[in-house]
Length: 266
Length: 234
Image (cartoon, rainbow over all chains, first blue to last red; front, side):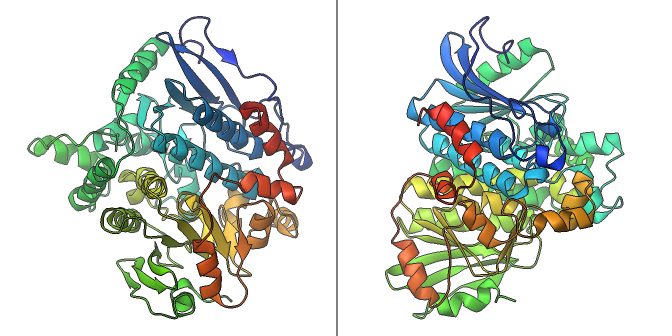
């Protein structure tokens, strides 16, 4: 995070060292930051608020406190709008060990993010971590105004392991790394228009992509959402019959160039 | 077992309604005491796929476009999003996120949004749809869950016995509307005449998300309130 922002500009919000009250009861170790850091800094000299999830702590999962920190940051931004809010999403979604409170925390942070969207405050999601963005994490990433992914970033709704556990390996073989990458990877998300920008993994490149994302400010509007609706319905018409993500790429390569659809920014 | 949403529509709208199920979604108009209500929800009892989510978003946008200010009633019943490789290939998360954004737009344009779960609401689709309403109500006995118990057990590595113990009588784990009400997520459970409840819910004031404050009344989610207060100075 510090490397994405102007040098020495990042300051973590003080006074929010609240570990999960629920994990110790399950015999699990809590963390003082509950797997998410919030703070503010400057990007090209302008004030930005930032939240960064830590995929190495319980898969970046969203528990009661983790989600409340997101919600708090987003409400803080609504009260005193910065140039932008950056969400570095690295999360497998709801922390199932905090079941109901985790699900509610996702809903509340999503609402706070959407309130910011409605208020016209630019939001940029960045998916560049090892956990990727799945479940509630994917909803947050996809509800940002602009989505940036690193080329190794991954995003999906129901994660491969979850689908495999619930529906069997015939539906999704989560051990097939190539299948996982071509289905959830950044290139596929960019191709479909769900990610606006993909950069390499270097922080310098990600920073440049974030700055470019900020140039694509597209406030929430009926017209923009109607356009996005057409895009999403056309996707079902064109590719609803595919059984592999590669088939979409091949079909796009063979098809005449389509009109730009405002990739990723409804 | 509770009735499913299509079975309560007559009780919600004694003045009549045109809600019908088509292509896996319930959509139409209810004739409420205070005027027309746009009604929409996924087909209950069936996992909600990308086509259904797109149809729900279309219903929201068409209401905003054609009927300024008309309130929305979201029927939140769904066992969860459809978990298939195909849905993932097509970008299922982006569809649900789009639906949530359509609801945010409707709210910003003054449409009151009320949600009702009758029997079972679950998964990311419930968080992105019914839980994005201004107010969420439940029939008594309705179930709300992140994942079905077998999913939670498999992903967390808990045994079903351990999970059953946790889910018995704990607001944190019990997958029911009463627990979600204690946590602040459910505004109330509807007993008695549904049309009167709906009329009152639709007349509720717009305003910010008060779910954390409601949890506080019940002594729940103190850690979340502390974290939000630390960041907002409130």
